[in-house]
Length: 137
Image (tube, rainbow, N blue to C red; front, side, top):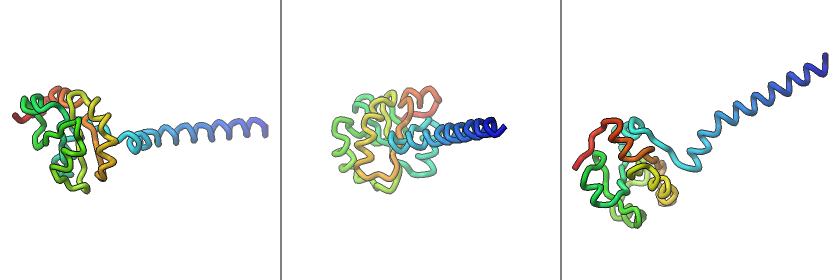
């Protein structure tokens, strides 16, 4: 009987550890890799939190249509583009590209520039369009 109780306790402890790890992993990935934002979450960041939106696509793509309030930031010279825009580092930043891939690659660079919070629009402008949200020309 004592042996079975120990096995039950070990199973409960293992379950506790696994569930705790599962709850912590999303937080850990956000801390390491930045915040992935859905179009709805990005809209909330922009409207309620006054987040800057940096469009990392080419200037031609930017001119064909970009998120409202987005600023063009040349992805090959992100640091220089951010310095030129004189952005307040206390406000969040949303990085946007066509599909979200390029934004993810530049996330660490934006974080190193001292922004409190940096997010990436998951799926990029393509996801924004798919959500039937407006683009500005």
